[in-house]
Image (cartoon, rainbow, N blue to C red; front, side):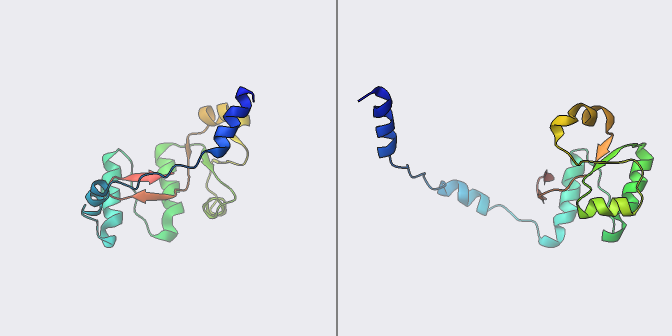
Length: 137
């Protein structure tokens, strides 16, 4: 039997190890931390993310495009990258937001253009963590 055959024989015979369960002390620590009340999550998130130098603009759901236009104009943003196939992208197009640049192809073909010729971008998030002011992009 060759060394190669011997290695494959050992791999085939190996069993999948069972991973240890989470340490009860760690799980207990996190379970015992105070939780923010649901009604206070947005306020706490805004407080924490502004501490990281982000800007938060609280607007009614239907007014976000107008506020974005105001912020873009105030900051002199000439090019705004967006995803045209999304609901938010369609809302931007429908409102006639100036300077829109569609993110509609793989990054490999226009990476330099993205980094040199795009002032800002609008993107979605997967979620946020109020207690730390963290966004999951």
